[in-house]
Image 1 (cartoon, one colour):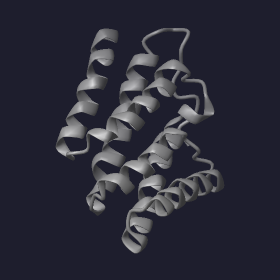
Image 2 (image 1 turned 90 degrees about the horizontal axis):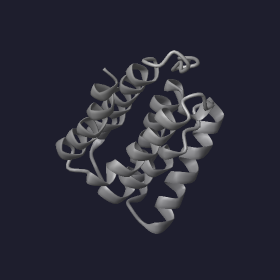
Image 3 (image 1 turned 90 degrees about the vertical axis):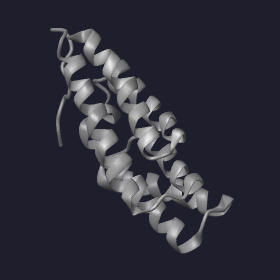
Image 4 (image 1 turned 60 degrees about the vertical axis):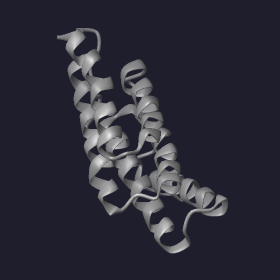
Length: 145
């Protein structure tokens, strides 16, 4: 079962990158994987942070992209705004800063919120739940909300 969970993650993220034509998405999802599999006890690796942080970063950056377009200044605004909103909502997730940059660089439509931001986050969290709970000494998540 552990091998299944380990092997599922790269296939899931590759599928999402191909489905959305956004290979840059591999970077934030790879960084999320480091947190949820490497330090699953971290507050930054909890489902609320993974899903909430990625969704908020995607929403904020899509709004900025819609009104200001993609430029170095708007990229900085997207990342800093995403960080601020994540801090205000208690959903800070460092890889979500890269999600904001991916949005600004690839200029996706609003469908990005569902696939890959939400769908990818849920898949990663589910893989982490399976993998981390196979060992008695590991429990993931520490909390859902």
